[in-house]
Image (cartoon, rainbow, N blue to C red; front, side):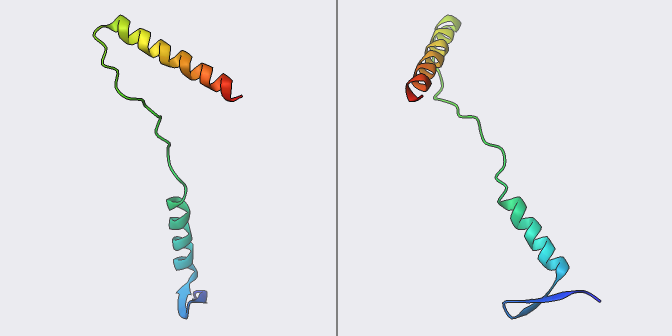
Length: 68
């Protein structure tokens, strides 16, 4: 005999309720967060690209210091 529960006027088995709960929990879990990427760097050389990336890294570090 299967355990039945009345939910919203309908008879539902415990298996149905369990599967529904499992699906809801997995759906609300979230997932991986995408790493934020800035706009593409259109540098004319590798040195220029390295300079821009270093500048952005330093600017972000200074911004973090200012927030704290």
